[in-house]
Length: 344
Ligand code: ASP
Image 1 (cartoon, helix red, strand yellow):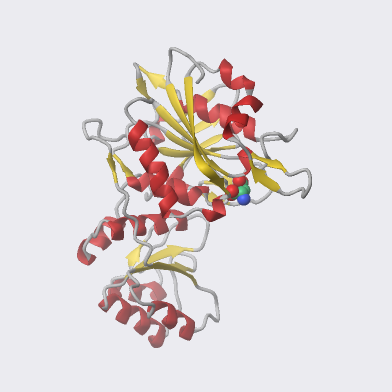
Image 2 (cartoon, rainbow, N blue to C red):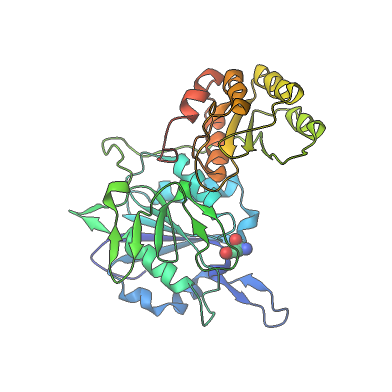
């Protein structure tokens, strides 16, 4: 524990490149003891906050992530909520946008910052981006005014920018600037000073108490359309047993093929109670159901518009709402509204 009179920060290590080192024999990256992570960054002792740490017993590459791990993270935050002012979650970058989006829905009425970060290069690497990402994430999570946290939402910090987590997507497997938030501006920019864009921060109702939702329904599918996609394949996915929802990644402003047979597959699925969400496969911009002839029918069938939501936020929002047993009737209205700032 690093002592300070100021903000109390809990650092949660789940795994990912940030805490890995090269196995000298095989040359491949392996997770190492989290305590060594703090030894590797003596600069942490200079920060004006108290840091405690907690680690997954077996840190993972984030490609192993799943809702059980999301619940583990939510559990830690719930148990340590009152005794900390902010949380920094170290996570592999590959699926960070999914986990961070999921947590944004699972943590309702969050009044403190939860900042996800990671790195493209391991912390021991000479040219690592890990130190800057970690140190600035802790500084951002420590920002206080009149003894209260300035940021009160789940965010993602990478390469000098803090984003709303459920607006992010990993866009690059090599560049240090690995994430983008194309439909929502940065919350904080890190330069010589930290520039907080206060007008874009989520303003939760401070009177409500944190509610942690831990049931995520995984009976869902994600279908990315492409010209020539086989209707047989689509039909097979839609007839999977127990299927409750499908995210349909469509073209441009939410367009799909308009053949009767394709629309029939969607219609009978909706009649069976399967929720269908229309999300654009473009990285930026929004679904506008009805703008073009080809999406007018979708609106009539009762397809839910994902508007400008990311696929990551759509997947996790659907898991959350189905897990909460929201009725079919209410699902469209709730999904099309902003719950945690994920939709404009
Ligand atoms: N494969 C790693 C992970 O996502 C990559 C990273 O940490 O950035 O866990």
